[in-house]
Amino acid sequence: MYKQIGILTGGGDAPGLNAVIRSVVRTATLQFGMKVIGIEDSFEGILGETHTMSLTQKSVSGILPRGGTILGTRNRGSFVKMVNGQPVYPEMPIGEALANLDILGIEALIVLGGEGTLAIAEQFHKRGFPVVGVPKTIDNDLAATELTFGFMTAIDIATEALDRLHTTAASHDRVMVLEVMGRHTGWIALHAGLAGSADIILIPEIPFDFDAVIDKVMERDRKGSRFTNIVVAEGAMEVGKHEMYQDAGELRLGGIGDYITRTVAKRTDKECRSVVLGHLQRGGSPNAFDRMLATNFGACAVRALAGGDLGKMVALQAGTVVTVPLAEACANLKTVSPAGQLVRSARDIGITFASPKEMLVK
Ligand code: F6P
Image 1 (cartoon, rainbow, N blue to C red):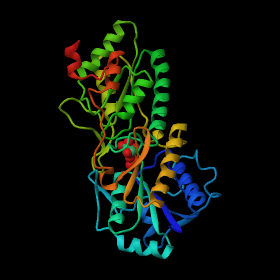
Image 2 (cartoon, rainbow, N blue to C red):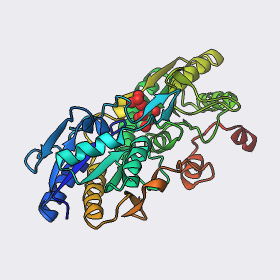
Image 3 (spheres, rainbow, N blue to C red):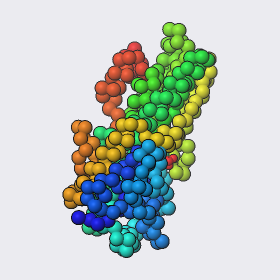
Image 4 (cartoon, rainbow, N blue to C red):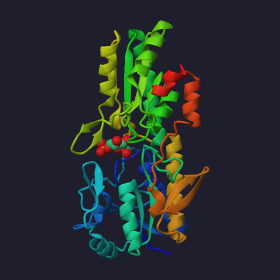
């Protein structure tokens, strides 16, 4: 059995990271008598002058509901940097990192992160270092796992935003456009759109037609609902067009909400307003479900490490936490199926995705 293991968090934060850290520390110490070292700022913390902290049951007490990560997740580009929105892996200083892990007495690692961070973890595994990964993204876009912690919290926040926009939209007879995160998938927009009674949901998987958007706004007007709530995923696009970026260099998605707002205002006599929910979806306390999932992921990750199930990532499949090879963990994107049940149910209750096909059906 390992005497001492390390834990680190990489990539963007997500509500529930601290809940995983707490669960790892408690499981490792209570069940296996292992010590746990927290590595600061992802893999950067084991380079140069290393930055680590000893994690005990006492030091993780009270962090379960806390947002962010007590370990930090600042990437200085030593292992991965973003070039034109794509992760580029420079010659990784794995040798230096392994030597430092040896000096620190860290015999195995639990790595919390998204595709970039877990790809680095796999390199450690390939060099024979014991590693287990824990998936993390509010976008819920990893095919290997049914859910990731942080997603449900993001939906809660987007739903509350839609509820609030609803009352102000109705009071002013306005069109309100809420842009939510999700990268190249529409999971947050779809789930929050259903939960927050959006009238129009726009997602990357179903490119939209402006005529269909305007049609829906005008139809609602005619029927006496003189306001419309639109939720748009940051990666959504018009038919025949590409995703919009707020920053051409870094390829950071954004701007589609504002574009829709301006276009609807131009093509109708409606007052339109737009809101970008942004990082409010990632900050702050995880909801009850995410605390539970994160805690289960943490305990399962330690059990996998202790049981020699190495080079794996914990994942939720059919409601149970299992392990999948790190190599497969982030290989496939999970996208919303345009023919799936949730999309169909949304259409059945009168929500439109504004696809040209829906106009034909009408
Ligand atoms: O992947 C999580 C996510 O929040 C995406 O939904 C969003 O596009 C991106 O990260 C934002 O990244 P950053 O924190 O670099 O602005």
